Image (tube, rainbow, N blue to C red; front, side):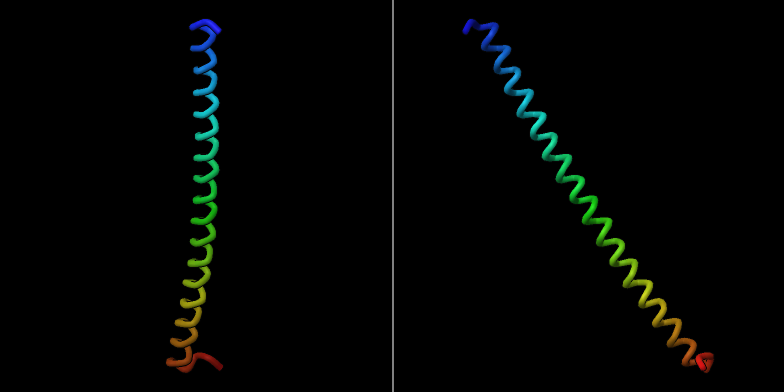
Amino acid sequence: MNNSQNASYQAGQAKGQVQEKASGMMEKASNVAQSTKESLQETGGQMQAKAQGAAEAAKDALGMNK
Protein backbone atom coordinates (compact mmCIF):
# COMPACT_ATOMS: atom_id res chain seq x y z
CA MET A 1 0.00 0.00 0.00
CA ASN A 2 1.53 3.36 -0.96
CA ASN A 3 1.37 6.52 1.13
CA SER A 4 -1.64 7.91 -0.75
CA GLN A 5 -3.62 4.70 -0.28
CA ASN A 6 -2.65 4.54 3.40
CA ALA A 7 -3.71 8.15 3.97
CA SER A 8 -7.01 7.49 2.23
CA TYR A 9 -7.57 4.38 4.35
CA GLN A 10 -6.77 6.25 7.57
CA ALA A 11 -9.13 9.07 6.57
CA GLY A 12 -11.90 6.56 5.93
CA GLN A 13 -11.30 4.93 9.30
CA ALA A 14 -11.41 8.30 11.08
CA LYS A 15 -14.60 9.27 9.25
CA GLY A 16 -16.28 6.03 10.29
CA GLN A 17 -15.27 6.52 13.92
CA VAL A 18 -16.58 10.09 13.95
CA GLN A 19 -19.88 8.98 12.42
CA GLU A 20 -20.25 6.21 15.00
CA LYS A 21 -19.53 8.59 17.89
CA ALA A 22 -21.97 11.15 16.50
CA SER A 23 -24.65 8.48 16.20
CA GLY A 24 -24.07 7.40 19.79
CA MET A 25 -24.24 10.98 21.03
CA MET A 26 -27.49 11.58 19.17
CA GLU A 27 -28.98 8.45 20.70
CA LYS A 28 -27.93 9.56 24.19
CA ALA A 29 -29.41 13.03 23.60
CA SER A 30 -32.66 11.45 22.45
CA ASN A 31 -32.77 9.27 25.56
CA VAL A 32 -32.16 12.28 27.81
CA ALA A 33 -34.91 14.23 26.06
CA GLN A 34 -37.38 11.36 26.45
CA SER A 35 -36.49 10.92 30.11
CA THR A 36 -36.90 14.65 30.74
CA LYS A 37 -40.28 14.62 29.00
CA GLU A 38 -41.48 11.72 31.14
CA SER A 39 -40.24 13.39 34.33
CA LEU A 40 -42.01 16.63 33.48
CA GLN A 41 -45.24 14.78 32.72
CA GLU A 42 -45.04 12.98 36.06
CA THR A 43 -44.28 16.22 37.90
CA GLY A 44 -47.17 17.93 36.13
CA GLY A 45 -49.53 15.16 37.21
CA GLN A 46 -48.36 15.44 40.80
CA MET A 47 -48.83 19.21 40.76
CA GLN A 48 -52.30 18.83 39.29
CA ALA A 49 -53.26 16.35 42.02
CA LYS A 50 -51.94 18.66 44.74
CA ALA A 51 -53.82 21.62 43.29
CA GLN A 52 -57.01 19.56 43.16
CA GLY A 53 -56.49 18.54 46.77
CA ALA A 54 -55.92 22.15 47.80
CA ALA A 55 -59.05 23.24 45.97
CA GLU A 56 -61.09 20.54 47.72
CA ALA A 57 -59.63 21.56 51.09
CA ALA A 58 -60.55 25.19 50.44
CA LYS A 59 -64.08 24.17 49.47
CA ASP A 60 -64.37 22.11 52.64
CA ALA A 61 -63.09 25.03 54.73
CA LEU A 62 -65.63 27.36 53.15
CA GLY A 63 -68.45 24.83 53.36
CA MET A 64 -68.82 24.66 49.59
CA ASN A 65 -68.56 20.86 49.33
CA LYS A 66 -71.80 19.01 49.72
